[in-house]
Figure 1: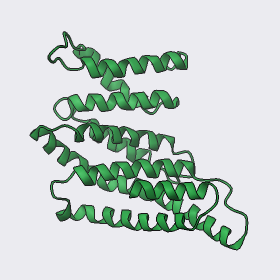
Figure 2 (figure 1 turned 180 degrees about the vertical axis):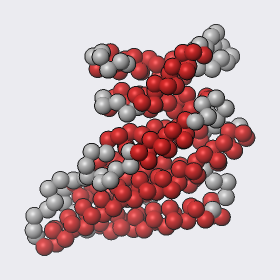
Figure 3 (figure 1 turned 90 degrees about the vertical axis):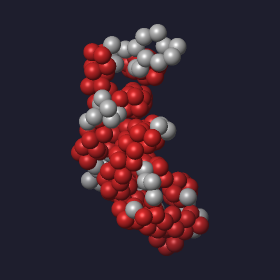
Length: 243
């Protein structure tokens, strides 16, 4: 997937890699061989940066590669991958989601896929590992979620005021903010639902639960107003993913 190749060839290469990782990363019954150790090291070193590629299709497939390797290698072998993802999310935290927040969304997508893979493992030691790592992302994801939530609320509030007064509506719908908000909502839901053995007794989870309930009430009320165009879509989709 070298940047010097044409996009289609790069996409085919990273898709093939994703499939091979799923089949041959770990030797098991019915699998005659596995990827060599030195090749695994090279893949680990290259797949996370590739998940931030400017080509969205390649970035998506690379994120899935990272997640599949995490399923096999975390926390025993690839011990530093989750801290690396946390650092990347923090570094790409958007100052304003109405600007270009592609990198922030891409690295949060990597986190989403990794937590999804880890949360489906059922052995006791795997469950304990997930209980340890998932809550560590809670405050970081709440920060990411809040930035995008506030941008959507500002847009919908302005649209509602303009619609009520019969004035000019905001020119541009915050599509990037909506993508970031929905993705962060998915991550937070997985952490809350699957990342705690006893959620009701976890003090750190209470601000997130409170924020999401208030957000659902707000977006539902905005949807009920019957706002025009993109505003209605944003309100309905936001309420749906929070519901």
